[in-house]
Image (tube, rainbow, N blue to C red; front, side, top):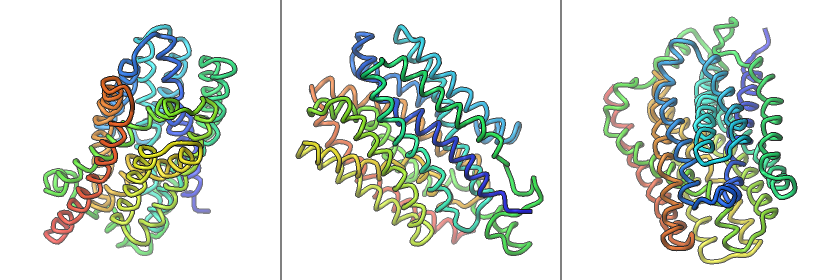
Length: 406
């Protein structure tokens, strides 16, 4: 029988394109117009991303247990349904409460129909080229952003944000319905083995590799991993919803902002694939160093200068850093603790990212409201992402001690 892993990866990639691409990477384009139409401050509207993060956190923490009960495919289906319903509710939103309700549903979709989906499916099917396939499938979200950002920004400018919501729902359905038919949870479900499985002992070693959930979360390395996740979440979840408003503040028009967001999405895709290759060739430490370096350089560039070329370069660098709380989280979890109890570990690590997302956008919005500009937020986030790299290197060193002790 022909190897079905690539078909599964295609399905996971389409789901990621719909959820993290169309669902998340275009969502920040609605913030300025929602603040104006609902007569709310940046802080109030930023709570939308706090609600999204809180919901994502809650369902991420539950995902390991839910997978044990109903399996990965029904869980992904629930996530996809939540995503679509979230945008339907947003279309009908006439007050801030309905915006928050939409964000809660979208949060379910971004977790169960995004990172939890890919993080659990790809390691089941790929032992060899695992980092590359994680990066490739997650990188599909960038393709969704490349298409979605200019389309959504143009629709908002020409036809209004509600029309943009409806078009987004249409795009999602076109991707999600066929994707669900492509997903097969495990190779053994169809009498196959993972790519790179070369002997009877290899599969057992693959499934048993690592200290397990209790051994991982009770270790010193996990403390520093948590700090790393907090930093990555603060940086990306704190800044990405505010990028359109920040660029508008610096003089860009809404259509050009859509172009910049498309650049961010494009290089998000490049970053995911690039970091997957780097992870397979050089290890997870090289991935963290490169991603954090791009983040620091992007923040400093937009702080010290402005103009269209600067904004484009910022979009490139910020896009390359975008995988930090996404595919890189799965790579970090696998790189530190292996595949043993992976659903529970990914539920925990993605839940922490979601928890940080509850506060990150709100903190950035509050700093902007208090100071009157995004300058302080930019500098703070540059420092945060630099510290993120440092804490992961400590976590990695501690995890090697844990591996030696097993």
